[in-house]
Image (cartoon, rainbow, N blue to C red):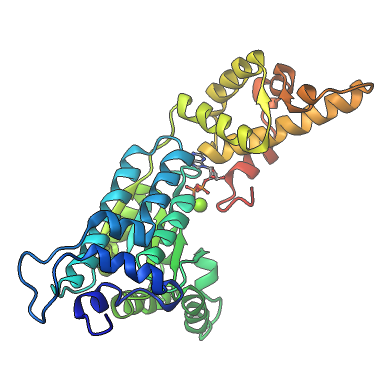
Length: 346
Ligand SMILES: Nc1ncnc2c1ncn2[C@@H]1O[C@H](COP(=O)(O)OP(=O)(O)O)[C@@H](O)[C@H]1O
Ligand SMILES: [Mg+2]
């Protein structure tokens, strides 16, 4: 079995932590129908189902389908990328050597559309298929990469790259790295280091650049080096009202809360208004609105006193929604600020 070159190649790029132990090697062995020779005949074969099971990729993709509302085209692209990687793995399993595919990506779309969340799932898929050793995500912005003084940028960028090695480096609002108006901006130094690593260390680091679509396109035009190193462009559109409501239901379920029928109507009305207000941040605004409704519900129950049922504890009522400032003329500045934070802790 150790002398079986086909098997050795099939698990060649799988990191040690994931390398199948004895019994799972049997799964792979069972997947191969023909006795391998050094020159694989054209009808040598590998069982796709066994491969999928071996790398537990479908599990991640199905979870992504279930746990994320909408994002149809993003989900399709993730499947396509997973298929490409799996086929690449199978090809090397039957002795068809290929250059490892370029996996750097751009995720474009407005805030709160699921870019960071999908990037984390992508990291898991890349890890399961053995394209990165650890599968963690390091999320940064310009300030984490670029220094304030001469000589500070290179060590900062290198430190981030070191942390991200073996996983995914997610650069939010990547276009801020480049300041056209300032030729001697330190961002340029970070860009050059990133480009070099993206080209030379492709086997163990995947870079995902995220941000608004139009700004990202301008950024790629001014920095063709980046554009040419990005293989997959995924676009995350704004959610529709119904999708936002479905996201709310999903989040409430997670927290073990429910909306009363009247509260559901109120929340629909809330979102309809909030969607068109400044600094609306899609699913992130939904999460923040739910948190504020929970606060109001708690206060309502507290004020009510007396006996409180389990149903009371679970239920958000219309008044918990309608008390929002979104329904009055002015919206407080702090509501805007919370929704607009680039990486929300919530
Ligand atoms: N399609 C979705 N279904 C359910 N929850 C979502 C969806 N998209 C985003 N979220 C949730 O909204 C919040 C913000 O998403 P995030 O991935 O940080 O967006 P972005 O990185 O695009 O700003 C997260 O809590 C995430 O779980
Ligand atoms: Mg984000």
